[in-house]
Image 1 (cartoon, rainbow, N blue to C red):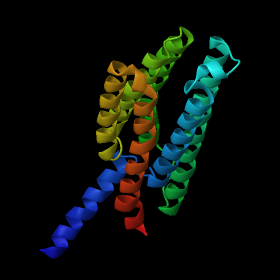
Image 2: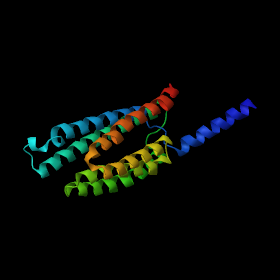
Image 3: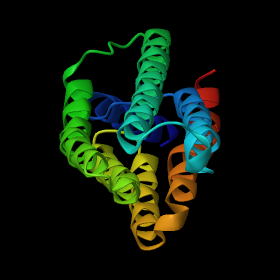
Image 4: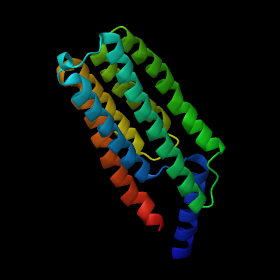
Length: 202
């Protein structure tokens, strides 16, 4: 009986590995969260706390904010790729397989479309709706990709959408909700994933 249960468990794990992208690392979530908090702190203390203290016009401020966001995005994606590659290598798995490509595709569609939409909002001067939009579209992207990876990604996506909607209502606190969503939530998610999956494999 025990052998049958072990066989069923082994079959289930094999099916899961073939249908889900399981190389996501909790460490990448933690570092992405730290990077987001650093980017938000720069935006607040350098520009948003008291814009009258800077010599930048509105266009220059928007370009600085856009550059800040792109740097945060680049570093976060770099962390995700590196730690996923390291985890896949450790588990003797290929990072570039059909499941991984499917995950990236489903993640990228809402991210690219939503990112362009938020960029237009930002260029039109509607910074706070752009902040809320990034949270909402990121949450949609996570939910869309979650069916190909860990279920925790789905719940993170829901939290991001809720924070985005709240940020749209209370726009004066938009950057705070952005920091909670991309910073604090990512760090907590990363710790949970690292403890539940990464340490378990050691």
